[in-house]
Length: 461
Image 1 (cartoon, rainbow, N blue to C red):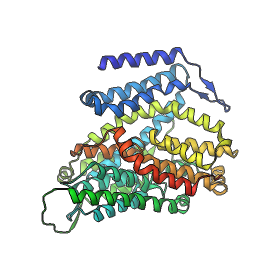
Image 2: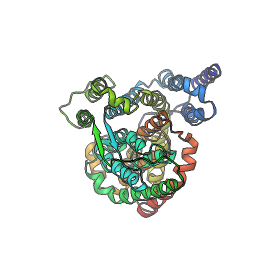
Image 3: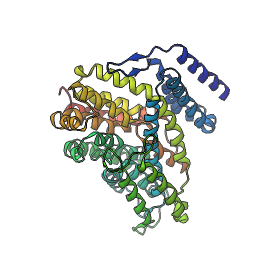
Image 4: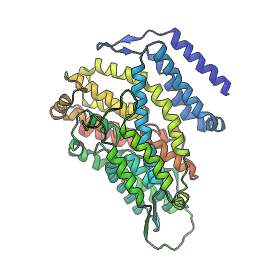
């Protein structure tokens, strides 16, 4: 099967090289042909179907497949478009992405939280709401990595896929909509000039009913499951145990390093032309130091291993590479049609694409399109602040959509896949890509997101 895949990859490369007629945007940039999204679509289909239909092959070869499909786009951009800048930009985003996820993953792996109480629906719901709140302080990735293991341990004996899925909904995504630290799309907006507290001031009244609605649905699911579950009763001490406090210092270092960027603090030196900065160096250093100094007994009790972060690193290197043309085509079309789009359309466009593309670059492209609609430039911080003050409805629409819709698929937001991998490594049989989408995300989230659209964005702008 691997030989057949190599033939397919070679055919795609040949097709792209022989049938390349890139367009030129009004700003002078090159817009790749539509068929350059083939490797991206193929990668998504393989992520969706591989674990389900050819699990053994996928498990052994997904790193090669991801890298090979990414390499197709790299070759195309170098050989046909002669565009190395887009590749370097995507590489820089990938390194920032993986540095943040890896550092939070390893640092939180050295923290052990034991809640020795019966896993009632109310306790589980309160834990999810707590995770949603702290996601705005330590990020959706940090909150997910800190709480997923204790959440599974509390429910040991009756853990079901829906427990993990609602965790992804609330803690890994929707919870982090109130601050730039909460979710990567908002952090990109912050780097471009959106004020830090703008998000909480303008989104809290959408965020609060949304997380309460999702938490309420979870409570019903868990209550019904508890009534029909058969598991061994035991005595509980009703205590909460917290070990590995020193690793909190590593989490603080990671959070502080997020702001160590020349775009945020002018005194921070740039390491250009390297595709990383001091921030990424600090985060990768934390990966090494936190693992070396971690209590090995805590790591063992947490069932810690590097497989989840390894899977994310391999798959997302392919995703970041193959989605380059998709994002450029979207940015071009959004700018061309910007004057025809209202806030509601921006909400759905940003949301749907954030579910299948990484939600951070998707958000940035639609932010650029929204500013372009009003004759403003996303690269000028003063103009971004002007847009923030004059057209808050538009900024609100894409900010809400990028964060909320990141929960729609495993690849919508970085922590999703990592939580899935941790759950599977602990023996939880998680649904496939399509089962997650059609059995849980669409029937549970889309009705809520429709109400959000109808109340806050329909017919406005």
